[in-house]
Image 1 (cartoon, rainbow, N blue to C red):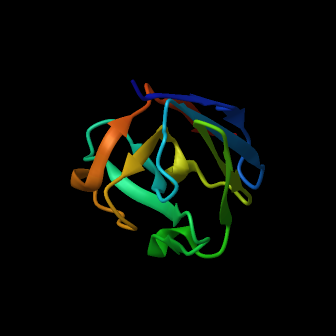
Image 2 (image 1 turned 135 degrees about the vertical axis):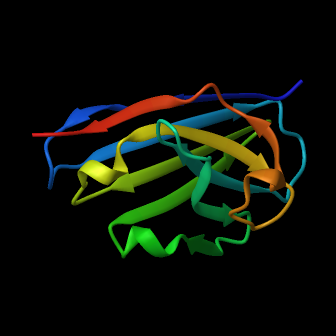
Length: 123
């Protein structure tokens, strides 16, 4: 059974930074893709960044080089992180970690979801 758990959300002022972490347990395959998604109130869930087991990464256009995704693989567990710098109020959302069917930023590509962690950016 695969479980996905995020941590690291919080509240920061504009221009601040946060680091999100994700632990996916129970994954037994050598290859994988994982990603971060977010959903703001009243908006659809959207992809933020994704990375695969080869280290290839892709980012949404709105990231604008502010975020960095990284991953590590241990026995039967995957870890994923998202370093977010120069945060803006429009980055406020619930951020979700997901295991993906491939290196995609579409929510439909997710096979497993975490429960989400809140990120709030305000003065």
